[in-house]
Image (tube, rainbow, N blue to C red):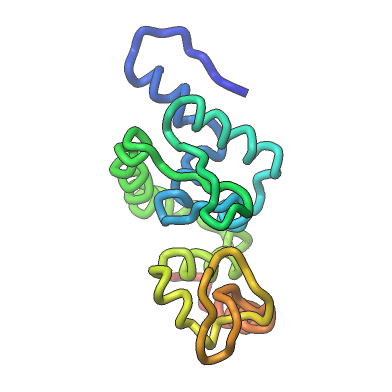
Length: 176
C-alpha cells in the first residue's frame, strides 16, 4: 500500500518511498549484502512473505532496488541501485539515533537469538561465512555458494548451535 502525502516537499516525497512499514529494515538487509528473498526474510522474520514481496516491488518501481536473475538461474536477487545506495547514510543515521535515543525501549522480549546470530552471520564477508565451520549446518543453503572445508556443509547455522547461543544470551543480565 503506497502512501501519498500530496505535498510539494522533498521530505514528503522521500517519505512516500522510504517511510513505509518494514522498508528501512528491508534496506538494512540489502545494505548488509543480503540479496536473496529468503535471506531478506530471515533478517526481518515478522514481515509476511506477501508484504515483503509488495515492498520489494515498490522499491523496484521507485528505482531503489533492481531485481536480477541469479547467475546459476535458480531465481532472483535484489540489489541496491545508486539511488538505494545513496540512502545508506540515512539508514546509518537512523541506527545511530536508535542507539542513542531508543535504548530504553528495548525489552527482554525484543531479544531474538536467531536474529542476533543471523545479524552476525550476515555482517560477515562471504569468504568468512564459508569458513565458519563451527557454525555450519548439514544441508546446503543458497546463502553460501561454497562449502566449508572443515565440515563439508554450508554457512547456515545448526539449530543446536543457535539454541546454545540463545541460552547464553538469555543468561545475560537485564541491565546491559
